[in-house]
Length: 88
Ligand SMILES: [Zn+2]
Image (tube, rainbow, N blue to C red; front, side, top):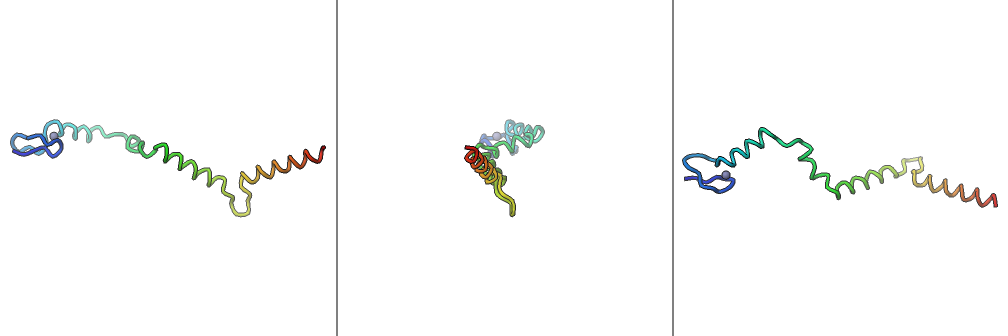
């Protein structure tokens, strides 16, 4: 008597897998999950947030010789304020 390595059920004769486990494994081989099912756990919320943060940082990071979008908007606001002050 041997036992199924998956479910520890006793097996008759010289089988190495019980019927259930064999069919489950066969199912996995013949109907594999699409790749996005396997990827999905990696798109956990924390990972996505981290990715977004890095992306935004990279986007706002000033390139050499070029003001960042953030600094540019600050400068633009400053210019507007100065303009308004001059009009008064
Ligand atoms: Zn089994």
